[in-house]
Length: 197
Image 1 (cartoon, rainbow, N blue to C red):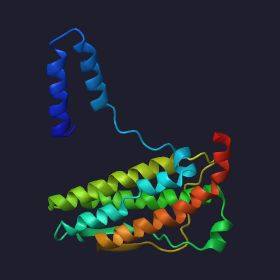
Image 2: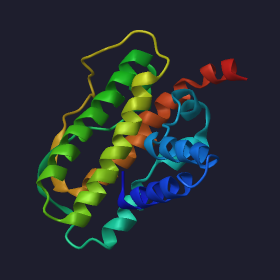
Image 3: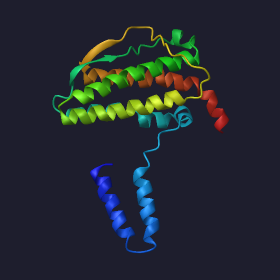
Image 4: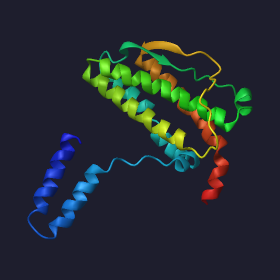
């Protein structure tokens, strides 16, 4: 819980202790501050293009980098997955293969970002990496929970990964993954939206 949330919670408790009616307020305060932010449901993500655009925070992170001098240079190299996508080959892959590719790429990014975040000494860079890590985690949760029967644990991205120490390059690749393979996977699942109407 953040300091602001702690102050707000303390205020709720103080008001709640002065009357019997305040007990309800107290309970609502505790619940509202302890329940984590709800993640977008996988079906909402697939069926709502606006929800997908809203989750994409790459531009926000790029803007925030401007106010964080030296943030582009990471403390060490991290592995960035290949996100190149060819329409012809993509169309011939199963949904299981497509999800495995997207999930594998997100997993590689998550591992690398989490590691360099622990290494950085620059507080604003640490904040940027934490926001990036949170976004990747949300996407990974959604992709894992997609209604796709069967699973593959050994995805073939079709091209080798590479190493980078540039946060700018990492964000560019991350954005290409979201607007490439992940977006195309969502479009491939559009038929499931009919069941929600």
